[in-house]
Each structure stands twice: as structure tokens, then as C-alpha cells.
Image (cartoon, rainbow, N blue to C red; front, side, top):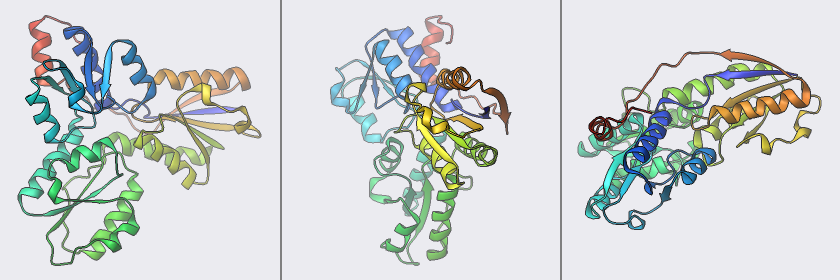
Length: 317
């Protein structure tokens, strides 16, 4: 058996920043530290921080007055920030800068009087946070089929934005439908789908042509991981989204000679290596790294945390 290890894979700059932010906050303030929603959508990362004393909450009211509350990488609505201020919480914002970009675009379009069509998945933390920037202005569009039922006319002032972790192909199909029905619709000058999402999808698109099966490391609630598995299936290749080697089924590999392994943007590298070892031990597989692109993006810690760490003379994680 031959294993192709896709690159880029795993943690993106936004996930690295969010994880380092929580690590640094724990070192600065001790525990418990409260986190609004999962810091990133990955079971291994969340379980690790629970063991270290982080408490994940879905409501600001669950956080004791005056405690430390960290906003996750997916971003939050302004009302969440206001609720945290009312409870006198020490808020730390670990929102990915690429999500913040979408928030700023939403605010700009709303102030200019546009109705905003957000292409994304209902209930996703990022979508909730983005729509919360201007709730009265947003309409969610989940599929290309939704476009026909939108209650707008060509005379309406419309703009579109996208969730950052979507399938590039799916988003493009929806945008094409929107532009066909609403020729005057406007969108952001630069795509909202993040660089890491696009790079990981491109790697699967190119490399899956060389293999019999694709393993995607990531949690079921990770949108970008789900898209990687879907993309492989769209290419006619069997694929499985798994959290780790404990979920591998040996029967998947009957007659299989080549495997592509990748990881969503919130999956740790160690779970990738666990799966590689499982296949090497079971099938004597050989391993080949195949990177389609280098990533050198880095996001610094939130300003308020850098200042506090500097004052405490705490070395960065």
C-alpha cells in the first residue's frame, strides 16, 4: 500500500492563533477560563483544553461575573460582546482575522442599505456570528436551489457574502445563480473563502485522482473537513471523515493499493500520524509527502493578550 500525505493539511493560521490564544490565557490567568462555543471545531483540541481547565459555554449567562471569557475562532455577534460587557467579563477575542474581514464587509453593506445574502450553513457558529453583525439585513442561502425562491427583485439593492469554510465549487455555483437572477448584485472585492480552505480543497482535488480511497482527519461538526470528504466523493473516490485511527475500519481497504490522507484546518497533526502508523503497521504501507503549495500565513495573538503577556513577562507559547 502507498500513502500520499496531502499538503497543506491540518492547522491553518487562524486555528493556530486561537489555540495559542487559549494556551496563553490559561498561563496568564489560570483556570477556569471560559470559552464561548468550541475554540475550534475539533474533538481532540476541545477535549485537551477541557482537561486543562477550560469551560466551553453556549451562553454568556453561564459565565460567572468578572471571569475571563474567550471568543472562539468562528467569531461572535455584537450582542454577545455587549452581554459580556454587562457581566463585567474580561473578554479575549480569538476570532480569525479572515472571519473579521467578513464581519466588516457585512457592516459596510448594511450601513449602505444593502440586503445581504449570506452563502453558508444554517446553525454554524461562524454564520450565526456573521448574521449577528446586522440581523435585519441578512438572508441565508444554503444551496443553489434556494436562489429561485428568494423574495427579492432585480430592483433591490443586494450584496452577497460567504462563510469562509465552504466548498469553493459549491459557493461558485450559488454565486453564479445569484448573478444570473440579480445582475446588479455586488460582492466583496476578494473571495471570503479562506486561503487554507481553498488550498486543502485543491490538494484533495488534484491528489485524489491518484488513489483508491481518501481519509480526512477532522470532526463531524467541522465544515471545512466535511467539504474535503465531499469533494473526494464528487471525484468518484471513496472517502471517510474520521476523528482518529480508532474509527478506521479495516474493511475499507480491501483491494486498496493507494490512500490519500489529509486533515481539516482544525485537526492536529498527531491524529494524522496516528492513522499513518495504523496503516503502516497493518499493511506495511509506504509514505510519500505530496504538497501542492506552501503556506506562510501567520496571525499574531490578540492585542490585549500580547500586552498582558508582555506586562507579565510571559514568553509566548
